[in-house]
Image 1: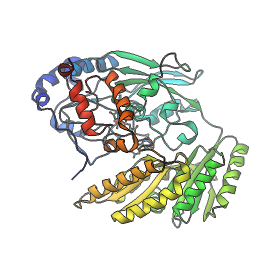
Image 2: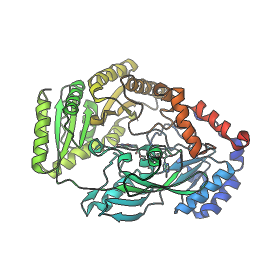
Image 3: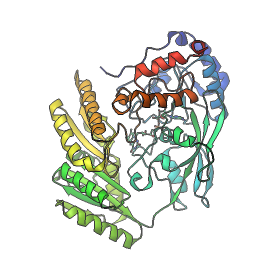
Image 4: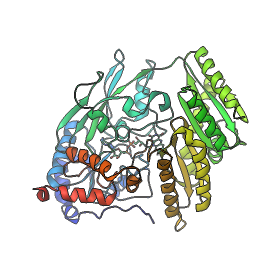
Length: 488
Ligand SMILES: Cc1cc2nc3c(=O)[nH]c(=O)nc-3n(C[C@H](O)[C@H](O)[C@H](O)COP(=O)(O)OP(=O)(O)OC[C@H]3O[C@@H](n4cnc5c(N)ncnc54)[C@H](O)[C@@H]3O)c2cc1C
């Protein structure tokens, strides 16, 4: 049983399935349309796998022009479109509805231009995050945002969700590293927004598009800032006997103005799962572990680590261990990056994503553990502590009646707590379907109305990625109201 409601599909669209598939084949080529139900099943969900619905059809174009043809076709026929990168969204952002066409960009996966002199790369949006860094690595460059899903997730999804990652504390998230996009509008126009230069004239539409969760247009290309690799980097492991003390250490490091490149937190259950999975050399007899990485020249690294160690000592760590080699550093990160997979091996879980002011970490970690106890559920924590970006993994048994509902209710309470302490509903996974019905905890009606007016401009008929981001009733009535014949 699941608790997040999806709108009933429009039967009149489903009845026209044959006509729609024929029109898609004309727009994008028959070989790029998937209509066999056995094959569309692969697109029925994303990484919020508790929610599933096979789409009407899937189309996988090779070119921006084909995307434009598809959007013209779907707009003309009034068919909802679900943009999809690699389907790793944890908030149900790429979940289809039965009356919608999934438009996947996985075949748009080429590098179009690499410009080391001016530090940018132009790629098609279906390229995976990691393959961008890999492509420039030989010249000692990298692309900074590094979601833990970077092996699989696409730049398209990163742009739509404004994704972050472990190393975003210093370098910022996608929006801070995105210079421009090519986007296809719902009407099928191809538009360029931003570009490789600094601060383009006109409104900051790029800022509006980045994080718009597939609701404004189909991003087919992106211009990304690439950075020269630092001279060196070194992580340190700090083990503490409670999560609250580790949280207080994070808050003090941030308060002192030290800026590590990454500052990651794991609690006891997460440490054990990751260690068993990756043999990263983590101490398993502590209740909380911080991985703090600094970078620069050897002397810069030594200087920053000295400051961090001085602050950490005030919190009496059980373990304080600097990496002594590149192999050790890789292992430390291998363990952290495998966290979600490692937890998945031992239990079903739901990964929440909220942000709080770092000064609230000790209080929120303590409160979350009390809340989990009151629900009779276990929570493992692994998150980007330096940004205050929490990822409580709530463990549950999908085969036990009522457990998923309990898990979602606890998740909602945790997200509300994030808002109550001055934080917000999402750090990097987006709203999707998962948090859509909580938006009114954070925003007033006027706040949401303003956001929906922006959606009206980009997508007047609300055919792009429906039932996401705004509470279902609100977005459904907006969509109904905006249908061309009703608006006339
Ligand atoms: C194990 C694991 C670890 C993760 N770790 C992180 C992390 O550290 N940081 C983080 O930020 N996220 C993380 N995520 C979440 C997820 O990987 C990111 O949100 C990622 O950016 C999604 O990319 P995707 O290509 O898979 O997008 P999808 O899941 O396919 O889609 C995500 C959203 O983007 C929209 N979209 C897709 N393509 C387009 C397009 N061409 N144009 C317009 N909109 C589009 C979709 O409609 C949807 O709303 C993790 C997920 C998993 C499973």
